[in-house]
Image (cartoon, rainbow, N blue to C red; front, side):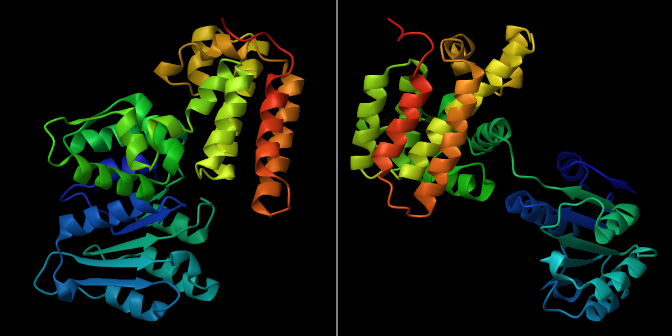
Length: 339
């Protein structure tokens, strides 16, 4: 069969087209569980033909024995093995031996944190069925997922609101799905089906006056006074220092990407795409050119990593001083504040 992308594997799940083995690897749990649930929905096994277990708790010989057993009054048997990365090496050999000649009426699904395509179990599943690695989504992929998931739920969400959600929650789909469910409940009695940036901020627990994402705008405008004031106000309102550092570092990384692409002679239109910018960041490329040169930005990035360690290890360093120091470093040199 084949090693495939996560999207291709998901798209190929149809009645009559299931494979005898699937390996769902990688750290992105939500999509792996959704795939396993989809397979179960297609097969619709009863209790006699369904078995779920964990790789470190169920003897492999029991799993293989069940896999070799024809279904009872059904067309297929489904076995889902969670934590497959915990299967011991000596037991993995028995699984691989089974997969060399699997029973066609059994669908054996492995959910694993393993993401090396050279893993023996991964390769055996790819040969017998399909295997894919589900990586953590990039920012732009998470934005697209949020927009698509909202649409399926009968809501619309702007790209800016989707970005605010991923900025506040991260790109973990399980966490994002929880936030969307909260929004669904929040908006259930309203005729308005549009999720705005204000709605997202409110559900994340912020008021308009305490919007931590205004900080990135102040930095890009090179408005040092406002950036410093926002930092102090946000810390005072209870926003975690590490969250603010992540926002500042996120802006810094994008500036560095733009400057590197500019130095390589990349066209402006290509820079926008390759730097992972969103449509509402249409001025970002021009704004990035008003910052100090690449060496200064790289030094600031090095400092941000140092500051991150300080904040995570309770080194005694004052968070407000750390954050304002990084902002000052980013805004030193370069152009002036936009009028």
